[in-house]
Length: 413
Image (tube, rainbow, N blue to C red):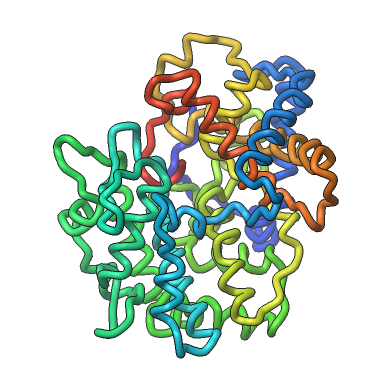
């Protein structure tokens, strides 16, 4: 059985800080990989297929980016889905603003958009007012959130769009569903969970003026500068994201009363009442960190060490591992059941995915002739593993969905 999601564990400040690091993610996921290699757990691992899967990812990368000018795996590329350059529109609207304010506005947009990015489900799509075309899945969520932001749904001063705490606190489900064009024939998975997440973001911003100033996510830029000046690491960005947004996650494990977010217990690693049994992933927080780095750099702040962040433990990357034959269920019948993110099976799947992403990235980097500094994991994901996972899913399942059935609340995957 999975450990109760609302457990409040006891531990040291050092344990809390460590569980928020990429090093903790890699250490704990590696322990579950070692266990799987030893024949335990829900998945058999076939690492003889690593070269074949890496070749496929390399091929997809070259097709997506023939000139190999690959950006980080971030939210920004999704905003231009459907053939319309919305980022050019956004930049035009910011003409005349100084660099740090331009960055704040972009953080206002990307933070709320990433938080709305959990899987949409196979039956939802968005009709884009820019082109009249229909966009589904993650790109559709991005474009829908972009239009809500530009229309002032999350906050405005009358001239420019922002994201503001008081507006998020008053947002209701009818407004969110209207923005995402949800209806009986266009259902969006986890809509209530998304709304709750935005409201919790509003509450967290209102409660932490030292990070969010007057209740605006873009003010994290100022908090980062106060702490680190004009140079920081990607881990510093992740740390401030986890600190500021930690309170927003629903029904999760806490340590000394502090919500840990995307961190789950696995009994093979330790007792349910001990921090030693916890496996951190921080999928949305790392996705958000990757997405924040671009506007932070545009503001003149140097951000180093992107390669130390981990792969994203979500169903596209995880699907690549199963559909590509690197992983196989020991009990195939489990594919017919729905699994919550706290289940041992899902925790193991996500953990093995993180480890295998590192191994694939090494091979893709070698195939393309780059080193780690010029081709960090963030580029392998974008090139990359996420698209390869989506392509295999489309080939194997009519709805293009993941190989495992996920009971998503709109806040994890």
